[in-house]
Image (cartoon, rainbow, N blue to C red):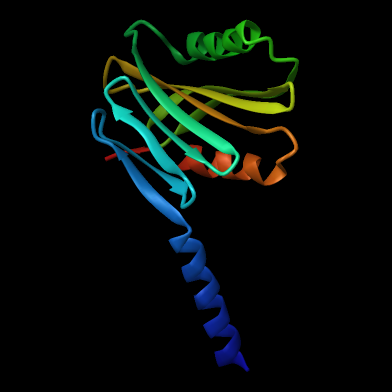
Length: 154
């Protein structure tokens, strides 16, 4: 019985691992993991974007060597104001795999928007990550968190 349970757990774990794919944004030496239903749309020095089943992911660079994490968090929040986000669910500063910054999560017109600003302390290039999905998709929130946690320098 233990062998059967162990075999089932290994099989399910293998399926979960195969359900993710590693992407590389060569222009900036950044890697991240997306679910296997994502398809790369753009991969150049101006943007990396991919679309999955009910979710879109984009990361765009910008340069500003004078920006600190407080400024970036405030700027991230100002993006929400410009986009007329009607509901803000979360705002926070973050430290993530060598990056610092802030994020905001909110919704408007049945669409949830996750915006994360990241400062790379080792360069003048910083990044905005934008993830959109349907407001009623509760699994997508966890997927967006997994995507963000997977961002790393190569």
